[in-house]
Image 1 (spheres, rainbow, N blue to C red):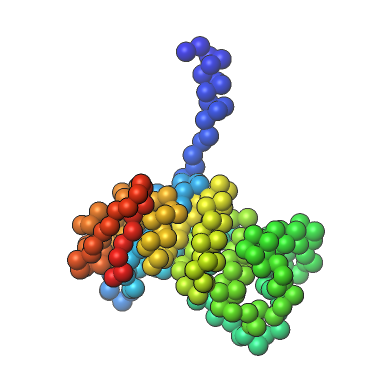
Image 2: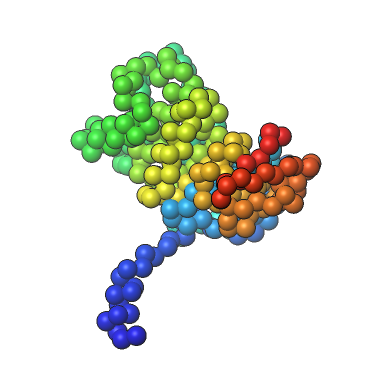
Length: 264
């Protein structure tokens, strides 16, 4: 290969960036181990689904990535820096968003607060902020409600607003903790299709119990119950599932590459 051809090949190849790296991470609360020796690498444009039983450490893992929980052992890097430094690159939607439903704040105002982390403290929102807020409201299908008080919306509608708020920050990583728990099935399908488009711009980690939908839409799947069972693929072995849920689990294969699990 001559030099010109080699340079052209380098131009055509996209550099794949590691956005999350956890190495030998342990977390314990009052001498109770919650996460045990977690090793995980996530790269840009990846869509990872994490499944596992309640109390298995899924939310704790997301908080470790955010720097809200400090590991007792191990290293965590977000885009090559500590979580506290990389937090500005992460959008996060928690499982439960607690707020005063009587507080007079509109959907539009809630989404705009996501721009406060962009140096907007004590400053008016500019055209860029407002355009980004409009874009993400369009994306999650909530534009028609932007003038409505958020406390008057259904739980599913509120969840979509909080997702829009996470997206308005232009994150490189999006963390979603059970985001579809209160959303109707037709809207869930629509939302998964949105996530499929979003991975072109960011890496996504989705914590969920919706095993059948995860098997269709995500790129890779991990099982977590204190220990992480992850093979950098979409395949899950019966052994991994039984290790995770600690009971017999039936696995049904249909089509290619779909994997659907019976209700547990």
